[in-house]
Image (cartoon, rainbow over all chains, first blue to last red; front, side):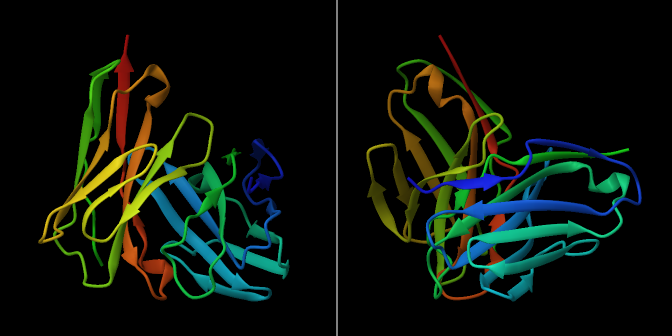
Length: 115
Length: 112
């Protein structure tokens, strides 16, 4: 079974703090994604990566950055957390380098609260 | 970009067949239709994917009419464990991950 793990299930941070969310997948997938999920808005793509050190912006990249130094690990960084970044953050991975209809495998999510 | 529209919620009873329809009027020629299921406190899980006509697997069936402007996810004989949020996803099969759009989802409640 593909396994995608996220470093924390729940996280509470203060406004202005730097926040790191870590994601690890164990199936040698090329593609990794970060989404945020808010009530009534579904999932929105923040960033994705199709290879080590490669990244592309999704729909809502403002206020976020990412890092992919190793194939299995994809980190989401909030340089200066704000209250409007309180949300559920979901990481996903998929195996294809050429198409994006391949199944995405999601982690359990990190519920981040910024006070 | 192909945007999707789904009912916000649906109710059903155990043993019934449930059909959830997704509207995607602006679907492009190279777009696929994918459905995901999400249980509380879990990430979404792939259910089924199709391009046209009908696709069936061990979990569900997906019906896509000839004009592809809508699709219907069919869950046969639902049980309480099918209570979840179901997402319809439309996106191209070559490049452009930022073109994938998750709708707000349909919250299905299955009652005894």
